[in-house]
Length: 435
Image (cartoon, rainbow, N blue to C red):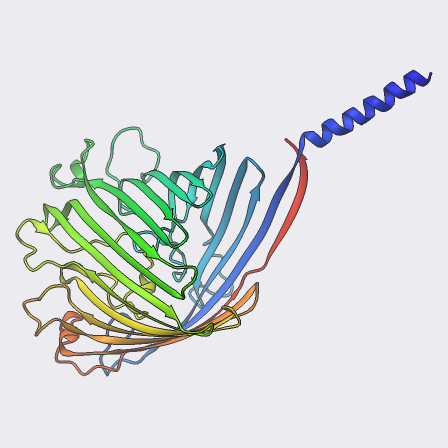
């Protein structure tokens, strides 16, 4: 009888240990965001004539999502609604909720994962790929991404994406919603000691060649042209010295359609910047960007750099005058200050941009195209609540008026201001479940 009791007790303990062995911790995080942003525009993007008045509106982004993870799998789904206040009536049922991201990630080997689905991309200083958080909708890509990370010392990503308007049974023309029919991506990052990081990136974007196939109506064969963008960054951030330096360079080649012809593409983008923190509260920064242009775009070679998927609002001034630099190119010499209170909870930033074209344009008097002054205030009241406001002014010259198509007109002084609030609550749950 005693042996039987001992056997049952041992069996119970064994089963208990087995159940513990086959269970694992699983994490579920539910999050949301409501971000209304009010903007006052009085010459934002381009000067307006004096017979026009400034505009005011409120945009709102709403997101709701969940992230699930365990030791082998991670997935995230984020739903999104983006609207301008008043664009829909108070009693109108106009569905507008979409999927911002929906991806799953599987651990293949230690340090090596495969992520597939709709996902935002961010690399280096966001010159080529950015989630574009300022945008009400953001950037996201449908793709498969293979990621390897060895203790943040050496990282490599390889990705592939293929675009169609719908399920097809034979080759057909893709009406471009994206800049590409298919995309290939390779990115690498390597640390050298504690102070230096070097990255390299290569991107191939292929689109239909409607020139050789005599237009999209006759597009029945697999015929594409490809644009290649290659480059990288070198950053220096010493642990024992409050200095940060970074240099970036990107080069483009391949083909591009220009005025109904398939031209060669040869362009580049150069960046150098640095910052120095004089004390925990105050730092200064300066930098220079050169975006190549083309003095003679009609010779069969295009030298104007084609921007990929950067966050436009983050570069070349907050008033977004130079999102598209075209054949003019751009030079941006900038400098500014940052006041940082309470370890980033409250910041005040100011930047001045002095703009010139990248090449001399025939109908302009010199290369100067004005300057811009930007101020930004940010305050993080809680982990889930942040406030932000900004003001910008553009100083116009005659060259800018010519480029923006208001030469000879009396214009208003271009100004822009905004204020936003971001509410981002989240709750994390930990569950136990069987494998």
